[in-house]
Image (cartoon, rainbow, N blue to C red; front, side, top):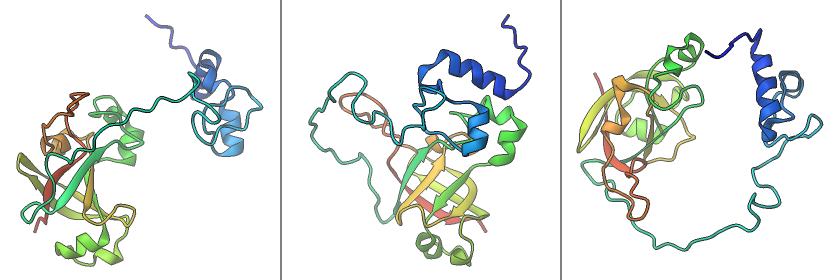
Length: 203
């Protein structure tokens, strides 16, 4: 059994910094003083790195492979006019089996939602869409050719018109139940980031 006798999260961060070179200069004291640090931060006096692999890649030269462009297996049409893309939120991990048990993390994002642009929200009949940026209000049904889910809606200009985003951490509104099973021809990874959906207000 691991001896979990830390007195604070700061102590845990100190252990991480002592074992992982890219976090070597990260401490709670520095985070409180500076507000944030962008890794790699190899030493306590290092200012942080604006972007990973600044100056060079870890293995020297970068490797580039030309590939042929291939359209997504399913694109929007009249019946399913939006592109759905799925992804992570800062506060949860994968299907939420660990992070959704944390009271603090659940307070940050307690339920699933779909993000959509104000123009699209207005187009599907969400009343007052332009007056509610970034607010979860009401519920919508998101449907694809494979299934449907109901969830809250967040109206935000940060997402492009014609595209909607759903985090995949919530089993009760399982975003990946909507996605397409088409595989990438080389990596054989399912095409979870693009599929066609319809979004309708739940009255």
